[in-house]
Length: 219
Length: 254
Image (cartoon, rainbow over all chains, first blue to last red; front, side, top):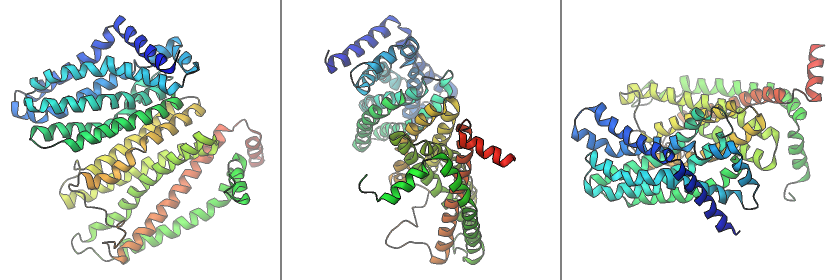
């Protein structure tokens, strides 16, 4: 089996596993929708205010949803020993782990991306912003998965890794949050956001590199 | 390794051996403490007594003699932690791992001091305890990064695995350091720009600058002292089955 075949075999396997356990796909998505619905309820029916904070609300919810889903990235594989088999295989572990992260993003990140426009309309964001919102999510959620994978790799061996995981991962998510929600806010006031989009793209590339290095050591 | 002269290489090899490190730190400690006290006293006298009052801020600017060195240290210690962690990861030197993890609580303390003094200064100057300015926020995130490092180290029982995990986390967190540094230029809001590191001409008067630099040096020495003390304890704990520790303890109890 060549390396690329191994890469896609792992993606296929993880997608198949996720399809068999559909709650894994549904849970982060439901969480995302629920948190976003809670904000208008907590703030009262003030459309102006809700529209103003919508970019931040969507991004913070996406961040939390991504973090909640992280634990499933290595957990079952660690428990049943297949993670060890992956590390023992003759292929470079960093590539195989990257495949797992890609599959994880397809299962948990992509659904967020698909449902985000609906929620944006829900919160009263103007239609012109939807494109930018999708762009930031498309660039940002993979970064969340890649950076989060490092945190999971460091904590997967722990019995109570959940709390410590949020402490490790959330500070590292901050730059993504700042630039992404800033881009959406700027776009809703009609400004050019190519700078933020470029920085997010740079972060994505950087995250790919750091992830490959760090996960090897981490797992 | 042919670039490194023989005596220096030998010095580092000996430094990496725990008993030698322990003895050396014991011998250095009084000198370090003396230097720290001299620098601290002269810095405090220069800063609180000799330096003139600021023409705009009056005497309340004097908190910078704590605030600015603490903020510098918070970044410096994180860098040291990451470098020591990298050395530990690459060359598997146990002492580098110990230095990395011993630096974390000291760094967290300095970060906390920088945040508290900053907000104490902000209340009379800006009229508010806290602003969501980029530099303050980044400093807060730095504190969380430190706490994450400490928490991760505490959560893993096997200290060898723990130091490896901590080193990786510190290296990943280093991405945050340039963001902190350049955040002033990126989103300049309320926080005044850097006044000392401008290379051409510092915009702070020399009589104020000298105590500031003395305090910065004093804080550096304090870091070395605190870090070495923690490292010694950590070393004793990890090496408690080793021969040299047993010998040390029996010698002391006799």
